[in-house]
Image (tube, one colour):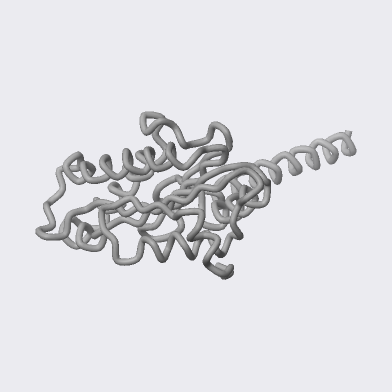
Length: 204
């Protein structure tokens, strides 16, 4: 009888350990504020996309004037705004770039986001970015937020796509998108294949 109780206790302990490990893995794989995937997860999967030999695209979104919004409306409302941004970036009504087909959105940190789009062409990715850009501008009104005079909330988007078997190195891709978006506001910028080919690889 005592042996049976010990075996039962060991079984229940193993189950508890498995449940705790599963919960921890689920937690660390999601950004606490937005519920999106984390920076580490997004970059790891993007590297896998690039190495896989299939066509695909990536979108980088950098929010404009998030600091001004927080200053005018408090960080509590700012966090709510970030959650609405996450909803836009994963919405099926944005013509679906979330989990189906391995696609996903990730918070890189602060007010910067990454959207992986394996098996998607450049024209479709640009259309998705334009759609999201327009939706982001309407989010403060949806929250009834105070206006930020001369500092309208929105986002700049960088889009890059590659052909099957012709994916750029990871560092080249990220550097090209970052340079193209620098000092831009409320716009969608597209990295051309020629530009990717002309930039030396740089680790990120």
